[in-house]
Image 1 (cartoon, rainbow, N blue to C red):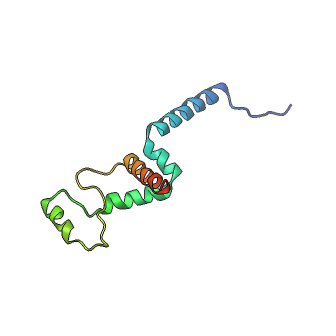
Image 2: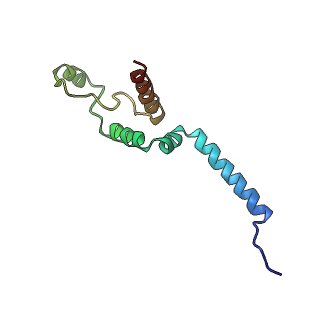
Image 3: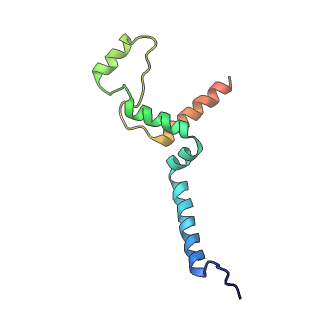
Length: 100
């Protein structure tokens, strides 16, 4: 008689519980969902959030008028950037651009 290896009930139950927990945590963390959908968006977010040129200082605000016309204000000045909000803004801008 040959022995066929089937997972026992305990293995199946534990696998299901841990699998469900992973799915729930994935859905609760929108950053993970966004990262899975668009790695390029995540790369740009990391770059902007770590290399922004804006601050909340009066000196920076005053310097905006003297910036070259080709300059861009990048990053977030008064609070840390949030991946979920960044994705919403980028998608909103893309929808606006395509609807014109």
